[in-house]
Length: 359
Ligand SMILES: NC(=O)c1ccc[n+]([C@@H]2O[C@H](COP(=O)([O-])OP(=O)(O)OC[C@H]3O[C@@H](n4cnc5c(N)ncnc54)[C@H](O)[C@@H]3O)[C@@H](O)[C@H]2O)c1
Image (cartoon, rainbow, N blue to C red; front, side, top):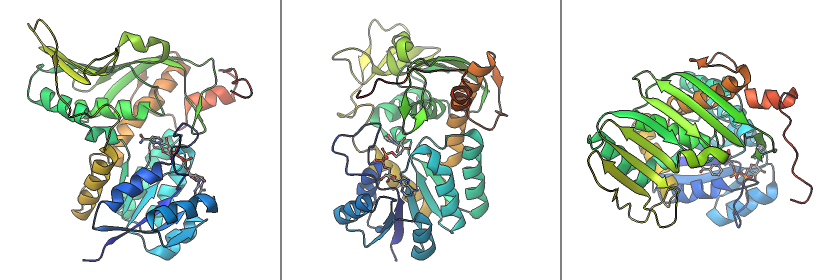
């Protein structure tokens, strides 16, 4: 059987020191496709020829473009990985779907506006393309095992899911996605939130608040809670699941803590759960996520990282910022198209101090 032709939009540089100015995520995607005999990376496109050529040399990619639209036109790709910064995802995903690509694997966060995120999903559905986002933590042992314990009834019926790590948008895209995963992809009914943004924090070119506090409720009654920045210590772990008969904590704060632990009602102490050396960030999560995406694509199915699931996480992000702007609860579905945080900064409602030069 012919191999699936994989192309890349945005290669980045080989990540020597990964950071918010460039992780070179394409390198991790490429390593994942290379492990799949059914895939061949046939082309890549980057506006930096230097980045594209270095990537091509490293992964043995035969064709390098500086214009991704030209690549889409000429290469008859089956799969495209989009590994650029968030404000570019919408135009690139839409162009790939319109060029007839049937599998699009895009980095998170989805887009920098709510209407952009919805458009990506709508265009892909209309064109019959399977779209997925790299919320790879769903494939990590601590999160998988926590979900298995929850599904096995070890803490009774879920009442509350919370996170206390990162922010609402850049890393928060993973956090909200995981909350939705634990709560079986139920839609949320409303969000009430406040943010503090006093020190400019641009991550991949987009504003991210310094501190956030958000509460939301799902249609099955389960509450979600996020407390980040100076308030992260309130949650004291990456994610906490509170059930009627116990608590599960993933990534509890503190030295020497296990990555996953459970305390059932009546237990005197926590029980640590072995996750085979995996922590909240890896290793191997992207390999598994991409392998599952490719497998689902071949079966004509959606991956758990599909656009519809990503939209539910994205709606919570933009609704939280909108709630802060409105000073009130935001009922869902979210009916404002843009990005309240970017708009509040642009309109001078929020004036984060710029980082001192040289820092
Ligand atoms: N899933 C995760 O855990 C995770 C971790 C880090 C970053 N990310 C996400 O990955 C995405 C990419 O981040 P990165 O750090 O890999 O980026 P990067 O800066 O390392 O690479 C981006 C590349 O895109 C190229 N580019 C810019 N405009 C382009 C255009 N018009 N056409 C083609 N190429 C273009 C740049 O030249 C650069 O080489 C971001 O959305 C980020 O949030 C995800």
